[in-house]
Length: 527
Image (cartoon, rainbow, N blue to C red; front, top):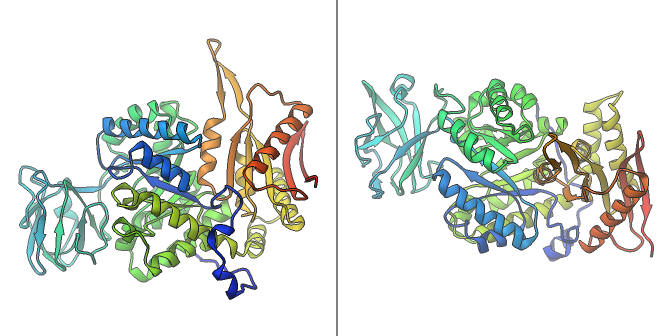
């Protein structure tokens, strides 16, 4: 995959770096980039979730690698309460377990392992986890690894260089057991550890039977907005997940393919065509790929997502904030580079799931994102997208690019787009406008002759993972006449004023359908 070069907007005055961060932004819209927070033991209380929403979380991730459906349902109820209390929209992402290798520590006793110590991985689940034996959930592992292969083991967060995860090298294979030598000293703590065999194909289905079961029960009951498909390796994985969602009448749920290993990287282009979005799981990728190749994959993958207008999510950015209130300099720079490379959203995993500073972590990442957005070279990027799309353009693509070009030319403070399914809004976001895009979602009324239902909430919440989009729901009782559209536009402008984005003498670019025509127009605000 070919990467693209992204340069900073010039000129950048060094004195401006000293300006307080809170003085930059788009009113109450905290950043254009979106933040996904994982809810867990340290972040599932109603008050904490409220703080996370106020700090900038737009999507809540529920990770089914841990916990029971009952536990997650309780978390979901806490989230609903926090959303009501803050009057804030929040999307819900369900993350599957997938073919993840796990080691259960039944006693939960910390396991200390010394450098050069020998540890045996065994499929015998009756054995207690200890410094000598680690029972793993994959019976066939001994048949797919060989001496000198590397296996990493840790609790949720592991890099191989920290004291809470262990880097193992396969020494020999004895029957169905694997004898490994520890390359570092570590203490494994907690009830469950994750294992990853670097560059080894694990012959397990991407959607396990348990995954299908919880999607059919928990996922359907909660009408999830996004399904994070863990360890996605082939386009067929996405197709199978789509068929399952369709059978469950979850046709509006978007599938985000989670690329976690070299096999997924190999089939990236095919996966991207089938998926609604991509999650680059850099933790596992950083183990499966040589360290010096990870940044190349990030840049190339984000470029491909950007050109197709599909949301791209980056993980593992501020690992140290699991334990510390501030990120390292390298982490802060990493977040900014993710924004400059073209990511739509930052996904926080362990940082909010079990971290000590979930609210502070989201606020810190949000501020870094906003600073990076200020120097993002939109003009350069806009030209790259136009070159990629080519001519002749499709109707909607032409309207979207014209709206962004007009907004840039006149220095508009906001773009307002009317939509029902969200396609027009996503196309506008594809061109990365520098100003926020208010998405006015017009609910559609449908009936099965027994009752009426309104769609629109899915579309609104699914905008919350796309960079630059800020949705509001229009009144479903409003008609689609021109007069009604003007009334909705007036309400949208008032909303923008209350958010601090639209001020006197500003200009707003409006993209809407009038009759059978799609129209882009410029509206001047009164003094």
